Length: 517
Ligand code: GDP
Ligand code: MG
Picture 1 (cartoon, rainbow, N blue to C red):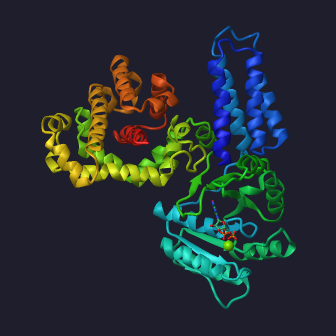
Picture 2: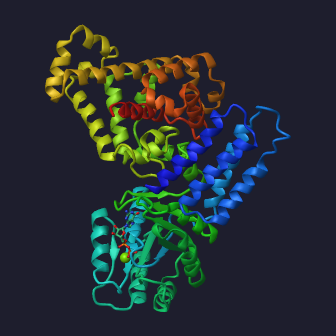
């Protein structure tokens, strides 16, 4: 995947700073050369790449900064900021308002992904408890209404369309009016496209727009056309009042860098990106989070949001952790939560440092496929399914199993795995429970957010050490060793309050899963 490649190359270039003993102009130039080459390869416009290069160079004055002092940080921050600028049009997109009808009209060429994205977006709002629906105003393409109907039915979203009416403006107007009367909040109007920009398409767009008076016009664009996106986005923007953009097919071999920077250049905010054909493959687009993720720095805010969507009951878990208590059942529940979070590669991309191991920067699956990851997780859960309640709730399960090895044989038999695999699971459990025990010793972790700043360093050091032990060595290296863990924990603390122990443990469970690779 091109975006993941770009992420890897940018990260490698940034890491070259870490390896240099002295950071001078030569080191900076070498790094910039690699960064620019990676961006050009991803099809970013050469003028934009040049600007990035100049701005990074301007950000640091080698004569002024004292030897060794923060040069690395200054440069890395400058690169980060400039990368964000590449994809940031500096304009806020339309925000739907709850409790009123928000009419959103989709436009774009045929095959760009309008109908697919319409359903994804309606589903996205539905999941957040908005009343969302779809109107099919595509009378141009044969079977368009059937396609929308099928998608909408699968997702359980009300829809409107007509087999007999030939005027798309009439259908759109009728559908929107009906749904408005029924109190719908998100009314999405799908329109037809043409293979290329032509007058008849724009005329039809305007007629539909006049009929429905949209609050927001979303322009859908296929990433595969790379830099050509700029001209296309401009053409649409000139004809209708494009309020925001969705870029689709960023999971493919599309030159995503070109599409994203080209759209930003037209001053249109990208609100979502499409990363697959499935209804779940729609990711909210936020410039900083996107770049963080691309660089393998994680998107902690995004992860927090996902965790909040879970609505898990964390109270009991929290009480247990405070006591330093962690059972196999706790671990089982954590795995369940991870499965609920959805495609693992997406979740992994949000966690700093992990994507480089999984190769999942940019959202798609990389080194380990989602299917494979899910399978491993399910296998571990199957093993735990063969344990009895006493074993699952035992606070010293490891000892119990060691003292009575016949239990291991029984569980292995029941789950249809080798005894070795049960032992590996227990070993991992032991490492996790060690972390929880250490965390239980840091009372400030559980008070309130303000206390997060006053954590006892010695006690936290122990927590980090036990986390390092619980991790796969390869992953530990990728995260940047002990200091990497600390940075990650700090990011989590800044990214939002720790909602229970959930995310911290969720993280660990994820890491554990990786270990099975
Ligand atoms: P429309 O003509 O603009 O309505 O486009 P469609 O919604 O019918 O989509 C055209 C094709 O692109 C379909 O095969 C979709 O499954 C596919 N598609 C849409 N979005 C994505 C995406 O984000 N990733 C991938 N891989 N395929 C997509
Ligand atoms: Mg369509």
